[in-house]
Length: 383
Image: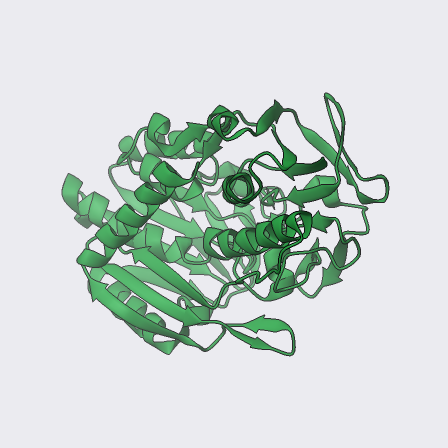
């Protein structure tokens, strides 16, 4: 019986676990390894930071997968060793016939001294940000995004709009200024001119200040300023958006390649299969930059489904249609308004392309509820 090892208990791992168990039933031995006993849903971390959800509401125990016949091992993954077909953990070695690794990304809080601010990219960070915001009643709030490679491209544009609504509800909006510092000259530029125009108009209406295209230097926590080349932006409350890096278990392995945007795992765009190892699939955020896709849950979800289809098809000896992503829907919560953008994804010369193919399908308060319902239903049905 083939051994399938799923490394990582995030979106990619959970999606794969469910699909593989449905397809293979008792025809393969499926094991998941993760250092977290819970599947935590990152899009809800902002809700925790804003006080809209409790930490207990944003995740599910990975032990639920055992009801599908999947063995769960809680351990920290130290290294992926594709040459010897095993994963090294702090609890020992885990061998495999097929490896599906979706390990997310790692955050760099050091390069620009971002650790001196608040963030909600982890659950602990979201709780600290919630507590900090609850005692913040006046002054200049700055959201600092120093680098274009970060998790969830729409996040900085969402959070400033959400904070505007939150401060209005608290009756302190006139006492707080909101500033977004971002590498894009035009807000939310990759989602096209329509999304950028809507966002710019909202910023103007709400009095949200935008600094785009400036070269970052660092956060000066002593002087409480964000330092850019030729300009300093003072803050009283700082929210940071850290650059991302490839997870350390892949560093130094032959699974990665150098790109203009850093070192990332290298995969086939349609299947998520490693370019060097037929028995390794890497449908995680750590592979999205090599595909030209955002480091976000939607493309990871579809790539994980494609990888699962290939693995199950090969084990069962059945024809495989990976069904890779052909459209990406970005549902954005802009506080009192929801924006839904669809990006058509084409396949050109074996690559995926979406830049420039985006358009608005909904701009309405209803849009934020569409997003909320989608996320809640996804979490509840993910296992």
